[in-house]
Length: 113
Image (cartoon, rainbow, N blue to C red; front, side):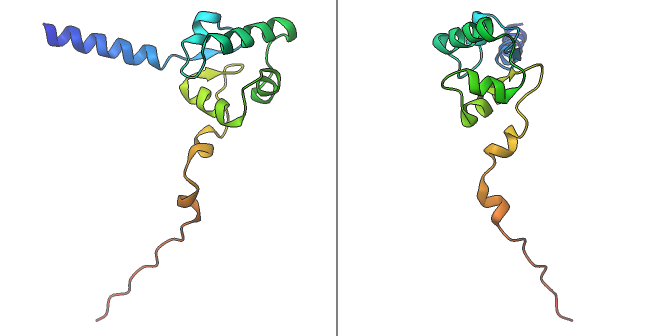
């Protein structure tokens, strides 16, 4: 019985940590729940949204909220932040190691007869 309760609690915690929040809809509490967004950043987001309206896309979000650049926006997107229901395009590619793409493919080895 205890194992089942712990399993259920673990699943609920995992689900909560991967919750997605749209920057145009989330309140301070929801935005603060995204890894990488603290209370000060959440307040800047909500304040800017109140002044300038909803964010159109990730570029608009980055240009209007101080402290949010390319690297930070990729991390926030991976943590579940959305802009107009969309994650940051290219977020996975931006975090992939560059050495993997630059490495030449191995040549096949010919076996002798």
